[in-house]
Image 1: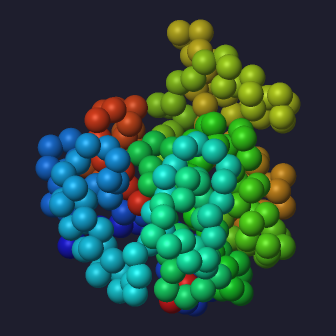
Image 2: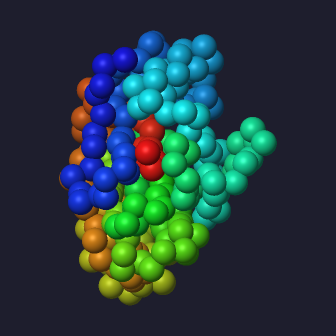
Length: 246
């Protein structure tokens, strides 16, 4: 596998590895070409398995990452606990043991990776607008059990404000919880709104006490070479954002 992924530009402690995969480097074909890591989108199961094996080998992981059944909710799984092979229905996971990787899959939604400054714990969260407004980031911070001021957060590749059009109900949901969240929405010519997922996540993290936030400069919709995008092509693969303690 070609080592084609994004690594956070953040002051993570030694021993913490974090990344988001990109489209190139796998064996999937058609709309899933080529490094699709999702088993639920209609891709050939053998191709997905091969992509996952290649990623695990490239990262030298002793065990498979904890893949989640993501439902745009706020449940947070604990990678440190033996799941007996069951895929948890959750949108985030935490780990405090070496070699057990947290992973979330996205194709426009926002992946958020967390690391304790002392390297004792890590987490990954899947934050589309529904998860964000419901509190998935706050739930992840709470599950980590680490003082939020000692956490680092990285915002991985997601759809940009210029490409993310939403209706009144989305803006109303955020403003109901945080009146100043209206600054993350710009009206467009169609009478709808352009929502800034990155800004909304930063507001949520700040309110939760996480001040060290990095990333937030990519657009999955506009960069078809590097990223899958559900809004651009509904029938598509998924990238994975992964973090673990070596």
